[in-house]
Amino acid sequence: MKFSIVINGAPWSSPSALSALQFAETVLDSGHDIYRLFFYQDGVLNSSCLCVPPQDEEDIPARWQALIESNDIDAVVCAASALKRGILDKAEEDRYDKSGHNLRQGFTISGLGQLIDATQQSDRVISFVI
Amino acid sequence: MILHTVNKKHDCLQTCISVLGENDAILLIEDGVYATMAVNNGIDVWENIPASTRLFALENDLVARGISDKILPRFESITLSQFVSLTCEYDKVISWG
Image (cartoon, rainbow over all chains, first blue to last red; front, side, top):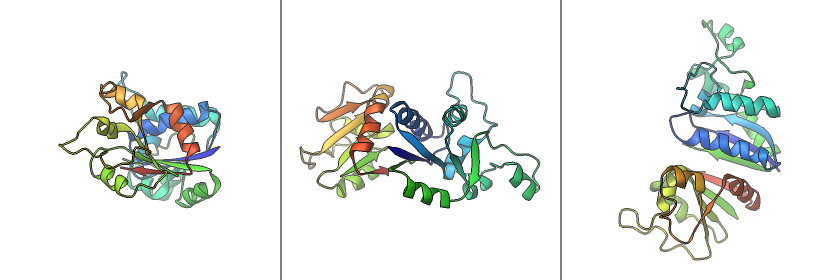
């Protein structure tokens, strides 16, 4: 089956992001496909490359990146949610004249239309709410 | 046939129960798994749910909270892999939180 997964929770703030990550890993382990990961609301914080968790805690953003890159998954970060939380790629850095960007490799900033498309193209859309 | 996932044990669980359809099932995840214990705040939330309604709780979350041996007998403890299978078995998934 084709799954899309919506991630609403920031890493470490609630169990939501880790639940979504473990679910996504298990979807692939079970032989299904992931059409899209959609990072929404506080979930966009999973896409920062500047998180430095303590060594004895899960590096949730790094695990997302590994999953995305090793399985060539489309990982979309909601633009409106991302910009106001300080998640920027190079294009947004230039557009808003900011001093840096921090979007992790493998993630793409795009719009809510990608969530609508995911609901139309996937057999199942599973949301992990906070 | 809807699979309802619930990740807290209070208001959202009550709302979920109030709209439950005949062939729907509930899967408790995260802090929602505390509702697998017999009585919460003196209220048995499962009292009026038909015996035919399937009730699940995610094993990882039960173990993480140290309550896997305290759950009501009508709950089935499931793995992440069974969670994925359930989302295929049911037509839709609604996430309550």
